[in-house]
Image 1: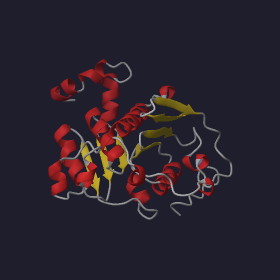
Image 2: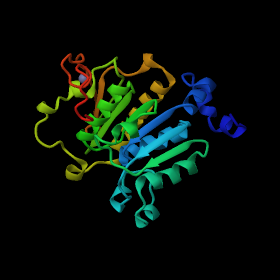
Image 3: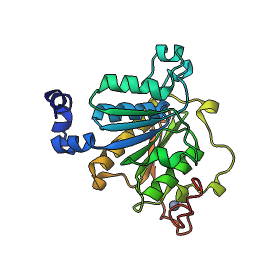
Image 4: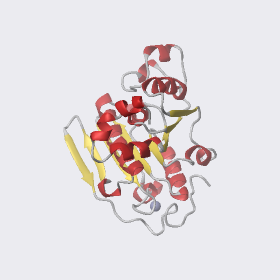
Length: 257
Ligand SMILES: [Zn+2]
């Protein structure tokens, strides 16, 4: 580690769950962030500042003016230039921390490209805004034994949970598609406030750090949910993995088959 890095990460060295050893682990870590929108750009910001050595950012969209209300990485100039989010994010992340590697991929995750874009990493972070992508992430994660952190925000509400293959039920166990009724509420329909995004992404980034540092003991056990406008925070006890789950029980991986 260079003298500049020693200075940069001095507050991590002091934090007893990280220290110098943990910082080297973060530097050796590789994460993929799916979506570089509101939650994704906040996650990328946390990962870059924390010194995670390799960050892959997957997003097909361009920066728009309506993103600036909550997508912390972007500027008015990015929106005026119609820059791709993954590309603009790389510029800003490297300006924050030039010690890391940022791998921008201008793509939308599909069943066909998911495995090539989501493997070769220690952890996948969910910055998507739709269920379809989460089922795809979950299939890749379970099939390849990669942990992933689910994070979602809409309105002033949010949910977050770290899925560790083999340790917890998977996303498909908890949210069987057959039981999902009607279209999910979306930010395009009901809006979203920036603080809700920031809190959910920060909770997810903290679980991400624990996973990368191997601190299983402190990983949360229950699904976190919150409503910032009401000032409510809660947790939901999760059931067991389902033996007939097509993803983690039967290993059929229907969303990437
Ligand atoms: Zn499952």
